[in-house]
Length: 372
Image 1 (cartoon, rainbow, N blue to C red):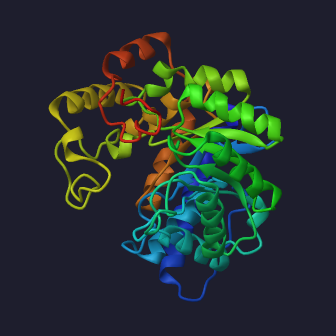
Image 2: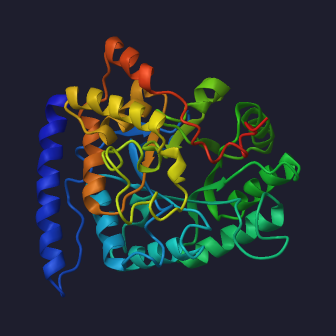
């Protein structure tokens, strides 16, 4: 398989760069996806379901709000699809402002991907603050169903493939949250449901409720990276294996910390420089020392640090898909190249473990009830 994979990926990347150059110069040419786009991507079954996800999926958490140009968003999505990335992951509050990422994606669907809807897996989520007042966040039936309706309108869709409870709500009965997800499926607004950042105990509880309801619960979306290994300590991976659920891990690059971006300094206009979700204090000397050590291992493997970080979360086949973000098309290309080498020797894993320590960067720990 590998003997065919590498040349196919090299060819696709070459063609994509030529296409992008032509499209940027042209004002009349319309985008046409590459006919060979499925040849090089790896697709994995999502748990015990019949749904396959690409080994790398594209997330819209950052860089798809009104603060980024529409042409750049288009280029990122086109490059992803040309490389066989068929899963696009959104949420109601992605922006800024909240909702603008879904609006932008809806425009891209209409302009570039019309006629290709059935070749995508599109997901959205609700759980974080979206609108003012007591009904604009968390996990109530009212909020989740209203949020799903709004997301569909913004994207111009009849349904999403997966709809998630974005975070555990300690003040709403779990039965209410799960029954809302069930209703969303039964009303034809989603095909499957998932949860995000629930710990192992809550995942088992959610699974039991949804199984009794007969709801197609197939996936969990936790944060996971070499600097954030909470799902190992919590036993979540074992739980997902036991229940037959798939997993798509977000922030496998630790919000860009596991790239070459911050090896020397904080670049201007980077996520840390903008003081958004990446706290500059996370880039302390202890974490930077670990990142530099991991970067040296990646270089010996012939990979960028980002490529090794993605390969590492996918190691052993326990994770269905790694969810990446990108601020430019070239970053998507770099990430997909991680699939060239997903194998690690025991010696490499042992060395990586010397540096892959908890960096105290899990800003979603409250949802997983890890704060004590």
